[in-house]
Length: 125
Image (cartoon, rainbow, N blue to C red; front, side, top):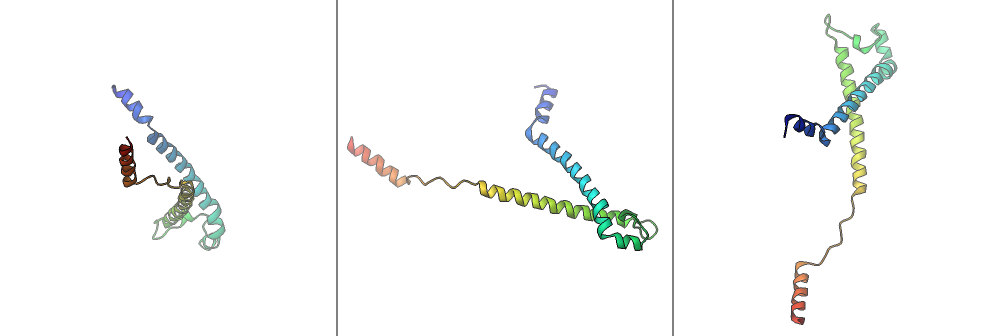
């Protein structure tokens, strides 16, 4: 098997494609969360604090002459929102999986019952 055909087989495996789709969707979701934080949460909830500090965005918060702790706070808020949404998605998926579980098949004859049937068949011959 040639190098390129082996690479093609690797690249086209389901896991690699699924991972690529997940990364792309994750990047898009990250942009949505960042916009949510910067454009909705910060203006609504942090507006009074930012106005008191004469700032327009949380990322402008600094201390000790340049330590941008506002960027860190924004990243923490982003993480909490992403973690919470992923928790809700996984919880919903687990709940859906529980409903799809089929009941166990009915129990068949035990080993002893099968041996008794074989014995009776052999007696009748």
